[in-house]
Length: 64
Image 1 (cartoon, rainbow, N blue to C red):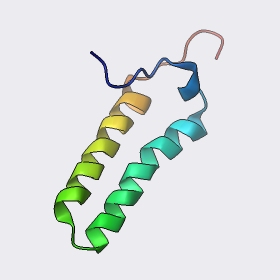
Image 2 (image 1 turned 90 degrees about the horizontal axis):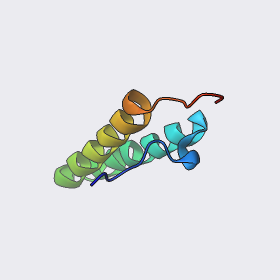
Image 3 (image 1 turned 180 degrees about the vertical axis):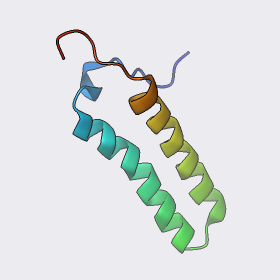
């Protein structure tokens, strides 16, 4: 079972993929600033997973 389908048409625009990746990293920064280290690590891990799937695994289809 895949948690995320990087081939879905929703993820075609690069700005959308970048925003989706940046959001959990931003929230990790908020949690870190409030000394909630565990949640900061959780959200940073989510951001890392999204970056892996949406930028390293994602490949444009023909015609994109």
